[in-house]
Length: 141
Image (cartoon, rainbow, N blue to C red; front, side, top):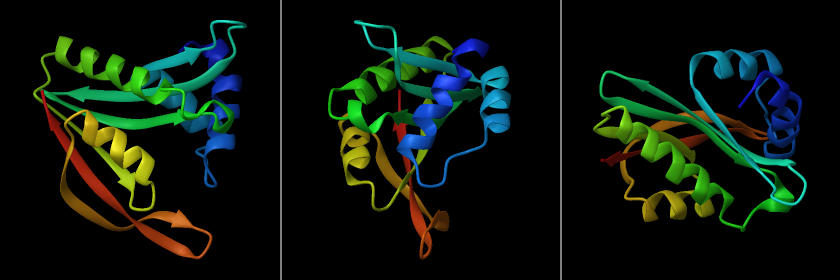
């Protein structure tokens, strides 16, 4: 992900989430973490992105997002494969992430990569009616 990608990444962020992060947070993440984008082969349009933090043998998936019109095309899988390979290359032994309790498609994908539930963060994510829990998942590389 380059600085020039940020407007397109924000477009994905804003279309994928009811409560998107700000462009300043996204720019900060881009400077601090491993960030990748998925571009359409036909026109180079950014259809998804992922952000990964690696520290002291552990990695944390900060975010994976795919534009709603591009979901169910295995873009999330490709992004996750890339991040796990990067984490392995950094000699990380574990990868952690949180997922909304209601996001069953994402939970299913993470399970296919070997992630298992290791905890719960109560009232972690905002919703239109309050908050919902996050399921904490871990994958051992």
